[in-house]
Length: 125
Image (cartoon, rainbow, N blue to C red):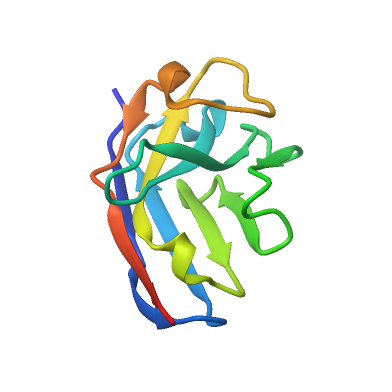
């Protein structure tokens, strides 16, 4: 069982930055592939970024590529999402997720096993 707790959300102006953190309870955190998803009001949850268990490979949605960076610190059981050049359309609840199954491009939420409770990110224009 893996418990995930996100933090770092908030209100920011367009063009600003935020860093989200996700702390995991798993003793074998370094075995899990980790991801960030987001859900805007009235929309389905969508993939934002993912990172392989080793940290050697990262994957991004086209909508965030070049602006967001996912990273992890296995010693701290934590995954991060650095979000720069934020836009109003980035406004959403951001969820951290974990899975043992392989990770790659074009991720959907259907293959992820563990989820955090979400943290709100609001970008004002």
